[in-house]
Length: 404
Ligand code: EZ4
Ligand code: CO
Image 1 (cartoon, helix red, strand yellow):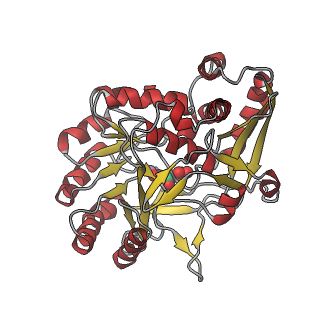
Image 2 (cartoon, rainbow, N blue to C red):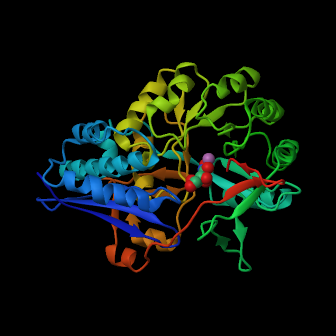
């Protein structure tokens, strides 16, 4: 079998998604997600200008060899643009291989290790009462675990609190110029324990509660927050420091028993080396889409398993249903699965990317369709072309840029 066509499809059914579609001489097709939120066209160029010419004529069954040749052959290794591009090729090849075998991808990854995949959903509110309503809404949707994010007194816009319009519909933070949010670490550290206190008081001790710090604290501040949240037994504290400095987690780890989750902005296993071997974290959070695909993510999970660290694949709205499908196949197959982040997609996005995976009673299943189980409606995709969009930036009250 040979790859005879490779094309990059950019579509914006409400937000931008980048998809690679490979076609073989036997008529099989494979899809891969290459969406890098806010920097989409860099990956499109990487794929279309530099990778697609290398794929034509290749045997799609050679997944490992193709991955190694794209990773090592570029000479310039790692980085989100490169690894998103490689991820798209890797997932498209796995899709073709599984279709050729007539099996859903999870069967090629060792088969099911569980019946279904547990998820967590996002709850957010401008204040605590609004957050409690949002948690109630996620529970009504069936989510077995909930991430809680709240507005902070004195701050106008905070990560994880979705703005709504007059009709209650979410207003996307993606826009043609970056939205400027504000930040005050002291106010945040004062408020978050009160948020957990209120949520525990309302929903009891059993509900697994997560919280995303989104890279904003120093190690000593993160240690303080971890200790302050211990009485509320969080399921995890996510990205408490900007963890490209892996040493930061040593101090946090020594100071608190609050479980730590890290890795949605990481691209390779090297970003995790100290975090895993020193057991500084409890969950690895990389997405199939930003980590170079199923091939390296599976290796990461096997490495992490030796240290009792579990998977928690990144699953925001900016991972397309193609990337989400690949994640759910991995989730079902790996032994050290932890939890899957899941926000779902809009009906229009689900019409562009028809998928076999299902979300029932708060649990995902990849379905039994051969391959990853996603079909791209190219006509509908073309009707919703790319729109320039940026993620927000954060500034302190004096105007200093802070990590977002
Ligand atoms: O901000 O994917 O845990 N989830 C997250 C996400 C990220 C977005 C950035 O594109 O932190 O919401
Ligand atoms: Co996050």
